[in-house]
Image 1 (cartoon, rainbow, N blue to C red):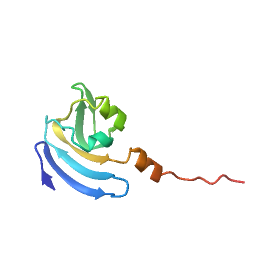
Image 2: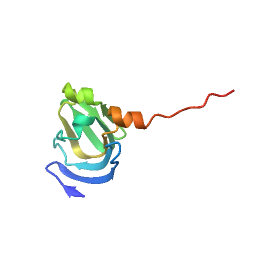
Image 3: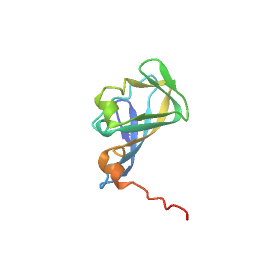
Image 4: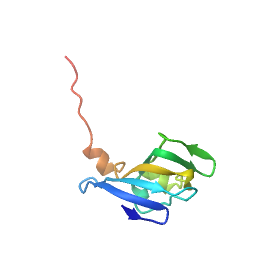
Amino acid sequence: STVTDYGSVLDMCHNESTGEIVQMCWINANTEFPMDTFCAIGEELFVYDGSLIIGGNQEYLKWGWLRFPPSDVAADRRKTIKAGSEGAQVYRKTGHLTEKALSMEKIQIKEED
């Protein structure tokens, strides 16, 4: 894992063809989880342990899930996010919400006769 200003991050997967990136992030208690270049292409956060606080008042506890499509990031809907008083362990996916990635992941379902 790599040490960051907010804690540490482990890169788990990077799909070159879709641009999808999967990471496990450990965020120190009461520390902001800043936006980075990956947020611009959409982001999903799954709270594996601890909690995340968004916008200063909405708390997502263990098993909480946040989704920020690229349009939300561009419209500044990904407000300030920080870890709660016990920190947070977060499973993070980015890049999978772009038009390119979504078009590559379409599934065809065969209708029953």
